Image 1: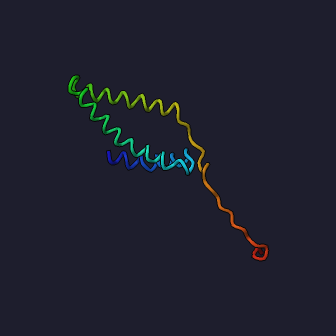
Image 2: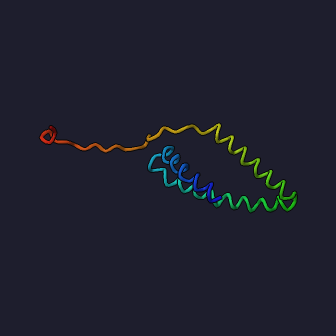
Image 3: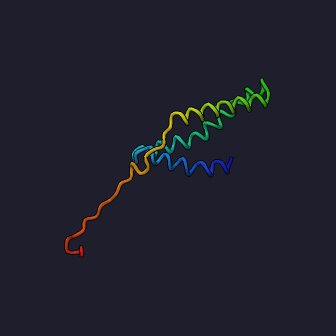
Length: 99
C-alpha cells in the first residue's frame, strides 16, 4: 500500500494542479486526502459482508467496485491542459538598460 501511494500521490497532486485553478486547489487537495479515510471506513463495512459471505466473496466484491470505478474514470477523465493556470510574471525593462 505504501509503495502504491508513493507512486500515486505525486501524480494525483500534479493532476489536481492542472485541473483546478489556484483558488480551488485547497478544496480539491483536501477531498483527495480525505478519500483515504473514507476508503478505510468503507473497508470496515466490508467486514460485515465478509462475515455473511466469506472472505473470498468480500475481496471479489471489493475488486468489482474498483474495476467499475476505474472504467468510469477512464471514460470521464480527459488529459488536462498542462500549465493552464500558470501565471507568468512580466518584468518591465527600461530602455536605457536594453543593449
